[in-house]
Length: 279
Ligand SMILES: O=C(O)CCC(=O)C(=O)O
Image (cartoon, rainbow, N blue to C red; front, side):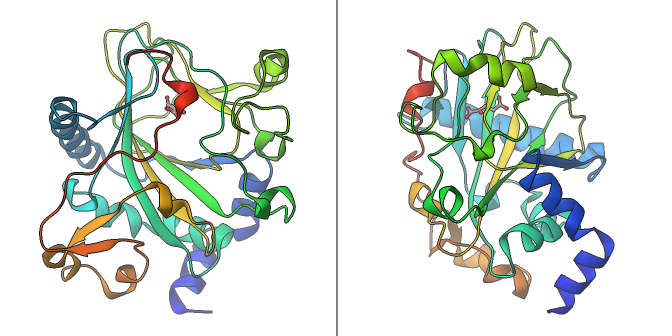
């Protein structure tokens, strides 16, 4: 066991973390960052969102008034703080093992007027989960605002990461007849600035209708166990200059291309069933 693993797992309880991700399929850490850190993240995301909206294909529609934008790690000032946070490392080590890799960074923006999404998974469950009963990827979320009930909170149906998807559309969208199961279990999440959550992207969830006059931008960090191959849906790029500044033990964790100049990301992870017409 490496020193990092030992330290992280001593501070945070591995069994508790695994119990949460294999049980409800979601957990979190309150107050991981201070509000100044989150404010900067919100500013970075606001600028990136503005740029992405101007670029054809820069932002993927995830339903009316709702987008997803994949970004470059060095676009946000807090990237290294986030991925080296001891709780984030402990969760990844506990659930994905010591060889985990960072494969995605992006953000979702549900704007005022966004409607309820269909209940969904972010991608089909892999054989490792269906047959092997093992989770091989995680999605971390960091809200950039204090979420209030009228802001279209993220809603999740705990325990449904294990649901059989054979009757789901594209193995991701349960039919409407199944909705009572998700509605019966649904929990709305109301994180505050500074909180981090982590979930299996297979736990059935949806963004809800945003009735407020405020957007609810949320950062997404995707992490894989070896063999999960979610990097194929993404294009993580790091400049050589930025790479050289990274802590040694982080360098090997990034499933990325090292480039001289950052290239515009052609958004790969569109979820057709979430488009619902124009965003
Ligand atoms: O509203 C959210 O926080 C998540 C939205 C979502 O699940 C998605 O667009 O895939």
